[in-house]
Image 1 (spheres, each protein chain N blue to C red):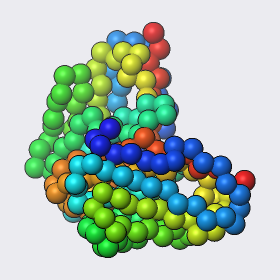
Image 2: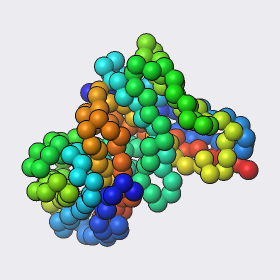
Image 3: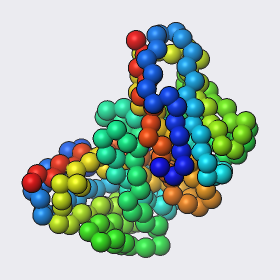
Image 4: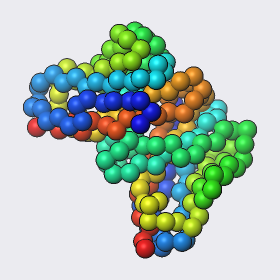
Length: 111
Length: 112
């Protein structure tokens, strides 16, 4: 899967707890993205990064923060998880002017 | 910002028939239009893409057409097979470095 590893693959957490999802790439690509997938909504962009320490918000960024301290890692943090953040989260990577490649996702359940 | 509409949301075809999925976009400046296939439990995978300087592109049984004037593009799958059953997403972006905006997806079922 284009050298992308998402961890964990599955997580169940309680409302109000902090959660961090990790995306690790071995391709040395500049661009990294976090999308969430929900029934009836397709894939929606949460945050993205265009370089180390360079990030920007997407369409559904409220309640999420990200960090990219190394080229290969892009972390997504839910500071205080809510039930509305139950979703499947996909990381994607891309080099300059090249197609987007996705990881296999993290299924997060907030109870 | 860009908005991508995708139809139909579900599609069932008999094996061997053709399937067509249509998308419209709102920003006339968009110039990159990929299609992704997602199988159960996996991430979306790119199957074909087209740029605005091209009207049609084919890859074996898959083709994409683009009508920039009408701001719509379509995915055509011929001679469908059971392994074509999946969720398909269209997307659009202003340029190669702008984040993709996705349609809501089409669940294709190919009935043997």
